[in-house]
Each structure stands twice: as C-alpha cells, then as structure tokens.
Image 1 (cartoon, rainbow, N blue to C red):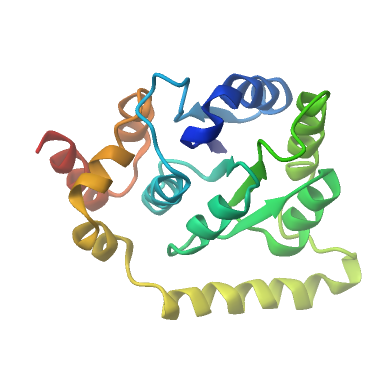
Image 2 (image 1 turned 90 degrees about the vertical axis):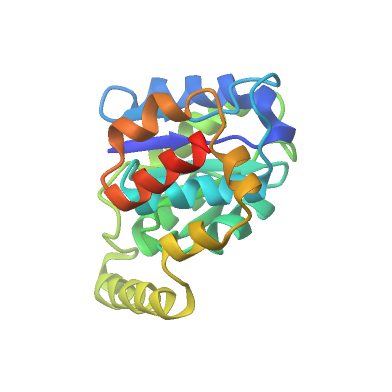
Length: 211
C-alpha cells in the first residue's frame, strides 16, 4: 500500500515527527510518500489544499491512503470529504483508528497536530498508525455486524458518486492558481508522476504545472 503524508502550513513543523512515526511503524510493509510540507520553507498549503491534493492522489491512484490533519483535524477532514472517492475520518486515539478501519473502511484520516499535541505525542501517533493498519480494513466490528457495516459502506460509496462531480471536472473548473500552488510542494514531482495510474489526470496536472 502507498501511504501519503500531507501537512498543511500551520503544522509544517510537525512533519518530521509524523513521518518518523509512520516509517517506524509501517515502513517495512508499506511505501510512505511524504508530500510535505517538509518544513516551513516548503511551498505553503492550507488544509483546503490538503483536501485537493489528497483527492488528486487518491483519484489518480498515486496513493492508496492519505494521512493528513491540521490544528484540530476538523478542517482537514471536512476539506477531504468534500471531494469524490475520498472517505476521511477524524481520529483522536488508537481506538478511533481501529474502529474507523474496521467499520468505515475509509481511505484517509485527519489528525489534530496542535490541540492536545504535546509530550508523548509521537508515541500516540505510533499507536494510532499501528491500530489503523492492524487488520484488513472493512472486517467489521463487532464481527457479527460485518455484513450490515459493509453494506452501509457500499451505500455511502454510491451516494458519493451521486453527490460529487467527477475529479476531472473539478480539476478543469477549480481556480488554476489555487491548483498550481497545491501541487507545488518539494516532493510532488518525486512521487506523483511515477505512481499516478490515471493518464488523463496525469496529463492535466503536468500541463498545469508547466503552464
């Protein structure tokens, strides 16, 4: 699985802490792609842009799962969920992570990197990441509710297909400067073009970057 890490501008200084926790817990079994912000000198992106970037990565197949957040985690979660084919949960602790994985089987999580983020937070992150990928997603919890929970997930996926427009329509209609700033982080070129599976999105992004 390819896991993308995305930090928005207010929490750029936390990127290394989060990335180190991710790679320590999951780096042996999964690819970790750090899209930044790598530091406060990286091109700044807001939590709204983190939502757009996450949607580009997930809809193009450049990654399979996104880990992001903001000060509280609320804004980033709302931003991600405003896009098609993105199911983002707001995670506070390891139990949240496990239940989101088993019941909701989403493809992104948002964490609070300011509120409550202090002494020992790197240990909490490790526990969250461990529980998030502890078992195959969508197994259900409790197990006897597996069938109904999986059915609800299918219903939600179908609802999002109706309530959201196609990702290419979004890219064509969104403010071009906003899009260019979103894909201008230091590591975007390093990971996106090599891993993107959707040629139409790839070509559009490439044209946008070079325009």
